[in-house]
Every structure is written in structure tokens, then in C-alpha cells.
Image (cartoon, rainbow, N blue to C red):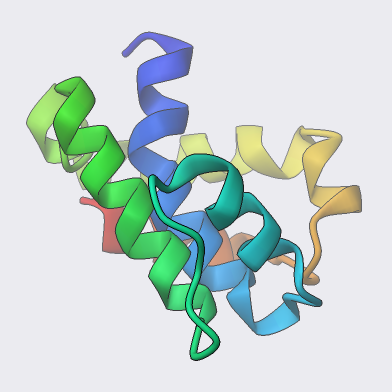
Length: 107
């Protein structure tokens, strides 16, 4: 799976996971991406839904399964993800168990 496509597929799932740590950045991002500004009732999930819509509009597959990823690869994929420098700077503390769950959600 091309790296950019994999990132786009996983982005809504990861953003939903990280939404518990949002400090207002999600609304700012939403306002950069959306055609209309966020309402006063904005919730981080609004950005997640917008990203799903954007992916669909761009023809990005909706799930890892859509690009042929099988759950039997998740353990190796999670090990690779844990080696990434992104884990150290993620807004939420992230364990291999979390990553496995995120892959499962994105399947």
C-alpha cells in the first residue's frame, strides 16, 4: 500500500483516538479544511467526519481491507509503528495494544 494512501486511510481513525487529547487544534484544522467555519457547538468528532468525507471525495479507500491489508499483518505493522518517532510526539500515550486496536478499527 502506498505510504500516503495508508496514512489517509488511517488518519480519521487516529484523529478519533487522539481527540481525547484535543486542546482546540481540531477546530483550527477543521476551519482550514471545511468549506464553512465550525459552529459554536464544534466537537472533535466533527473533524473526524470531515476527514472521512474528504477521503471519499478524493477517492481514498475507506478501510485497510479495501487495499488488501489483512489482520494477520497487524502484529508486524504495530511493531514497525512502535519504532516510529511519531509515537514519542503523539498527543496521547500510545502502546502497541492501542495501535493494534486502531488497525482493527481501520480494517
